[in-house]
Image 1: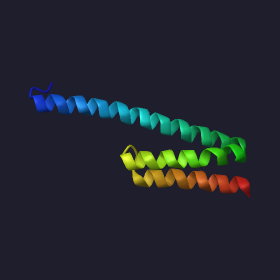
Image 2 (image 1 turned 30 degrees about the horizontal axis):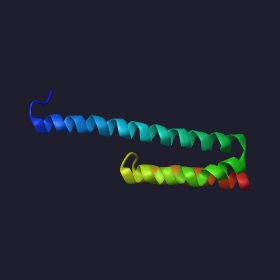
Image 3 (image 1 turned 180 degrees about the vertical axis):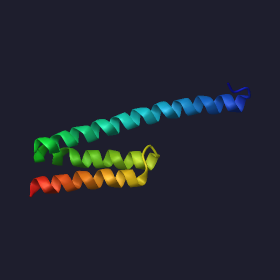
Image 4 (image 1 turned 90 degrees about the vertical axis):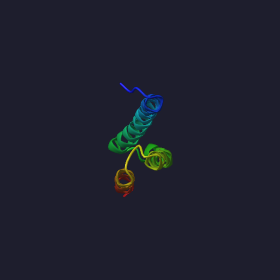
Length: 88
């Protein structure tokens, strides 16, 4: 365990950041699961409705460093590709 005040503070901050990142990652995964479920069911209208919201959330998580920029691009690309395939 940390002994110095600065180390104690850093540890406390790391715990808070970890919890914040966990909650953010959970929100992201839930949103992805919802839109993927709509795509799998073939429900284009529900997928289109959730697309902007989900893409916005993906961008926010990448900006905050919860996920990597390339991972964010990959998620958005795959969702858009499946949605375009569904519409065609």
